[in-house]
Length: 425
Image (cartoon, rainbow, N blue to C red):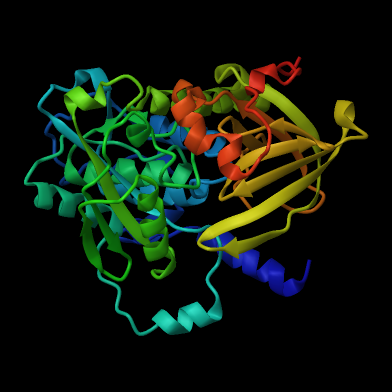
């Protein structure tokens, strides 16, 4: 790898996706503090929030769990921690609300960010250098814009996906607005495309939606010709905005939010359990990878050493692979994982081993920490683990937008648990 490439990756690792929200609200030096430092309560509202309170330790556990379920995408854990650190330090409070606690006529909506994990080129930086960035968080601004447009208050926020930054952004947006976050999301993992979405897959509309760029451009999208157009349109806007696009869509009534398959229920609690398992294993001198696999009913897929990880920026996506040389019981084999922002397909030698929509996560074998794409090091010892996709993605409707055929694989979907291997023993 060239020195220039290493420098670019280092700069990119420090700033994945956009951190506009994390830099607001007097964050300053607080971004370097761990979430567990605790809140500054002075001036904080004491109005009780609905749902289960999330203290700093619960927030940390939740983000660590999201790093596993993010499948290499969803932003970096460092950025998610930074996003929450400032909010906690400023006294904001967080809670999780079960979907079944919503009344029929209460409304919720989903705030999230869209962007590529790839670094910006010098030409792009020069092109947009003259634009003045407003002192607003695009994600929060989009949430407020949709509420105003619909003339409707939202009582909770729905995370768009599970990822350490993307989930943190939803949590912080909800906390700034003084509302809880639903204990649910729209994927059950992180995903590269907006149309891989439980709301639309369940037959509900995600529009109208509001979008605000990092430059302050604001728009309402009232209608699309087909559900896939949401991804096409938003991705194009993101590309012309240096990957800084805040979106809020999927305004749902409580009745629709409870429709079977509309949301992936209990997903944030699952992430919290994974993070807690990791933390407790480390504290007790046990294997954190084994603990996470057990907590998530996952699978131990491969052990090895990273030998290369080529990637490129392609139409707003980070498109790459990581190639792993086997060690231990996997010595003599190679494992290859392709990702489009998130890990999608894995091959053991020449055979497909795991395919979308099931979850693939690469972790550091020594620390057990999940690795975000493309933050690998040649020679790094890694372990690949996997989890079953939520039920909705294994239906015909789910597989049509998130199955192997959608990503160009000419092979029928085979569930991860049927791949002929067992959990780590």
